[in-house]
Length: 103
Image (cartoon, rainbow, N blue to C red):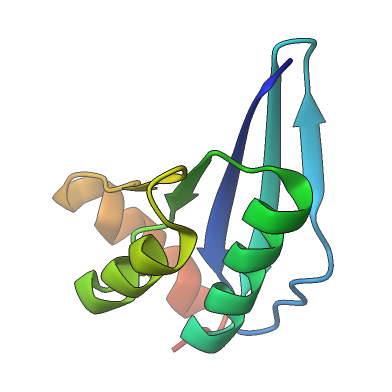
């Protein structure tokens, strides 16, 4: 049986029905983008209940309150982690998002 995880990121034009999958015999990694916290909550429930996700990794754009809501929603059998970089990495990502009109 494979370990099943998901990476969830924010994107202003996201369609959370589009879920990608990278898979090996021992690991499944789903990837999905959401527009906002409401979509994140609905999508997280789907990932856990329908796809058996055991760990959700969030992009740095999730606020602490959002993370707490997601953690409570998915329960004790699914871990919630946040991917955070250092200041220079964050600046690079911010420039790219501004260039693409996210802000």
